[in-house]
Image 1 (cartoon, rainbow, N blue to C red):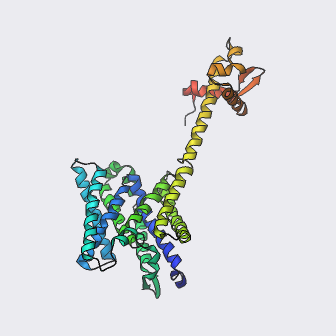
Image 2: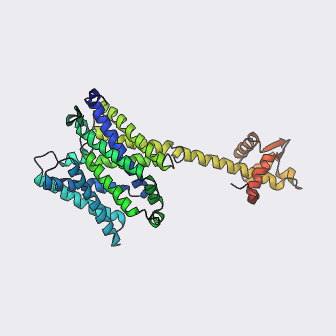
Image 3: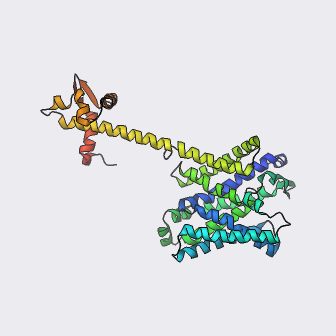
Length: 379
């Protein structure tokens, strides 16, 4: 990586956004699959309390001490939420809604009282300012490197390493926690490790994209990937790719429209989610509609084949299996009867013998699949 590239504001901004997205989607994939995605919302808000407390105790506004200290607040949020839910007086979602507003509110009040003269403020914490990350640099191997790029880059590397090394354990504890516990994999500890890293990533990212926009990167790319694949490893890859694409396209559109860069990046994650929702190859709206249409056509073809099969060789075959009798006997209007008949002819299920319709071997096989399912070949 050349020094010139690091001095380029565009590269610093886009790379920071992409790394935030990769770091967040790595962990967000498991949170979405576990149904815990809203915990990222709670954590990203409650770390405000931790950030202020760490600053009051140590004076650190950034760095490892700030990340570890504030991340502990995220775990405190999870612990308090679970403790409240275990009382069985409130449900899990209500417990989340009760705990994080309290910690977030205390954090905001502490900022207003003690942190008015430093750059920690509500706007920075909530929205960040990714457009200025290239101004705050540190020297590394003789080159000036944006500090946000280093911080979130290290966090992304830690998250990728965590998921890579514990992939099987995370997969099993996500899809079958009872089996994971029986095998001694400690799914509870893994869950706290996952949420602890989520908290640390939120702290590392809030300077660039803010706590609120961080939520979008945690939830939306993995949710879009979930609509595109059933494979976990591919979901991780697609989620990361959507994060990178959202950062690049969000930056370009933000400059074009002269709007918030971080906000546009988060909005683009939503655009990719909508695209996956509409055009996903298996779960997309159009794919499911096409599948329903195909099933309806198959059902109509089966109904035609079964009708002809039932009267084939019988005394009333010429009356029942006549072209003109289909509509009345199958309760189809004329247009539908003609449409189904043409499709049956095209697919080789039936042939015409004057006004009489005869089944082909293929058509008899279709009828037997319905009438004699025990003769279907084993899968």
